[in-house]
Length: 177
Image (cartoon, rainbow, N blue to C red):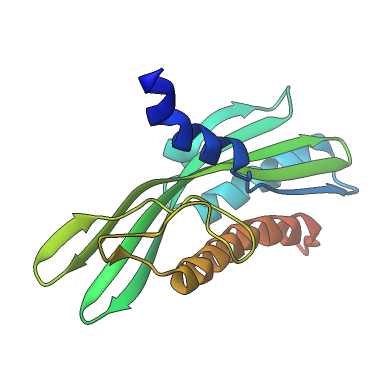
């Protein structure tokens, strides 16, 4: 019973946590092999180390899976900076004349604040939409206030949406050879 009482706040926050997921499906005149080739080029252009981020590369099944990291830094004033590391998965699915990009499993895995020669851990800020963080963003005066947390989350989602938009733009490019 004591275990249930101790873990109930975690269970409640997990149950009410919203999943931040981006997805775009488009039709195209490109063949499966053309989409595959453009997708591989997009990954090579977008990620510094394409070979290490690709977790699955299945031409026959029409799927490429990429695991990567997005680091966010926010100046918190008076010489301090909060840094957050987000891991996420990007799935590229394709077949003749159709492709989809999905960005999901976005999770904050590390958070710290640096300044005045010290580094301290701060609360992880899990992804959310809107103006209300899922959990507290400050502990003992360290971390981001609500306003800065909302702004950082808007920036994170904007960056991830930028990956999606760039991919769609690459698929729509007309080759001029």
